[in-house]
Image (cartoon, rainbow, N blue to C red; front, side):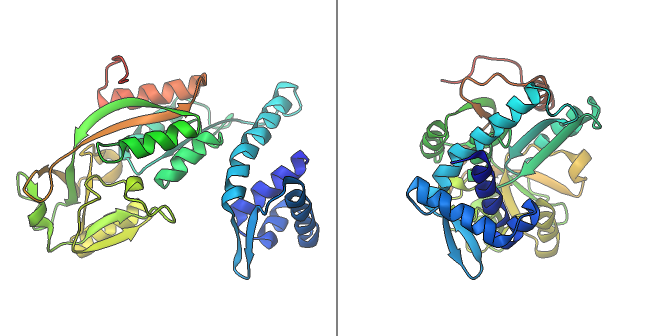
Length: 312
């Protein structure tokens, strides 16, 4: 097993096909296929499901790459340490559920650094990928929420990935909608008020479990539901279809504009309000970079968080 084979496997998984990966790697498709067959023979299990539409990871392959990515990342760090990559930019990446406060903190962070010397990235992505990105060192920090419903399941997944969840803030659920929505003028909104309007939900891909949903109260039976994977599209659907979503109520008008608002969700006999505990993920026993520490401080500053002992 070689580092080149590991890098090839990672490239194939990201490209979704051998043809696309071979173009990115500047090698022939037959050579790449042969290299992956040799790797699979050595590890003793298939890493990829192959079909006419491309390739996907097998369960064993997904677990294998979870361990392979840190190895490749550490090798790159070693190269940089030995001075073989003097011109390489320092990198900082965040993976997050769809939160405007995370974007706002990122904006303020980047303003303080010379972007010609640093490579910054922020990925708004699926819940499971937030965890995977931090576990595989694709991102230094991940941002997601816990609730009474999903806490046990997500913490188990987080801990098994070798990560730690750090508390940032608690907040109750709000209904997020367009200011022209028929319910926009209400002081609070009950579940029964929403029956005539579509609930907008961020798609979690293959992770269909309720535990991965970004919207609190996701266990309720919504009469109408539309899924999307893009925040801008969700805002368009709020306007065009009078849709809504349930959120933390932390809205950044500077980035999202003033055309949307958050109305408190009122508990009723159908759905009880629940607390969202928003926090960030890091690798166990990891020492955060100076940029990572700065980003967390920017989030705390925006959220008005004071440094208190973390929840046990």
